[in-house]
Image 1 (cartoon, rainbow, N blue to C red):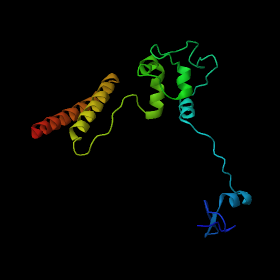
Image 2: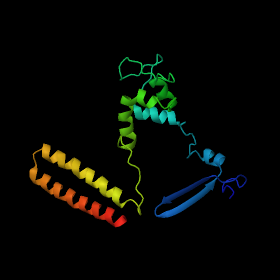
Image 3: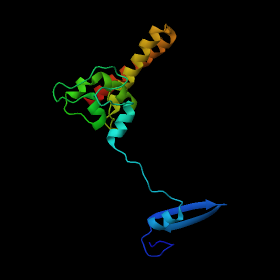
Amino acid sequence: MLCQNCKQRQATVHLTQIINDEKHVQHLCEQCAREKGEFTFDFPSFSLQSLLTGLMNLDTQSAGQVVGFGTKKLQCENCGLTYAQFGQLGRFGCSRCYSAFGERLVPLMRRIHGSTQHLGKIPKRAGGSLKLRRNIEELRQKLQEAVAREEFEQAAKLRDQIRQLEEQAREGENNEQ
């Protein structure tokens, strides 16, 4: 489609405006759109490194120390990568970096994924028993919390739900065999 303004170049900007319930569509080339002055095409540069650095709230100093985490310089013994370098690069140097920087990764993973434990996805057809086991684990955790808070009526209800789900799990295992 050609630019509606100059009728020479390919239209790459498609503007739709609704004014007083009327729809106005313009197809312009980038040059004509710039000349109209209504558009800017300056996009900020974006990298994975800047994303990770922003998520980690890191301000790295030239000395390789990480502001906010004390003066100790964390470094992987295997590959020599520092935590500050990880913040700049956005990736690890080796598999041992996970254990070297482990204590600092927990808040990062929690912020990115919402959890520090990978649960994965459950297939709809084959995942019935797995969903049931996860539900039982969640209820057991709630049961322990209720007992700790001395909410024994709630704990009894949770105990009964767990027994019912465990019975369903046993029946499902017997049906599969």
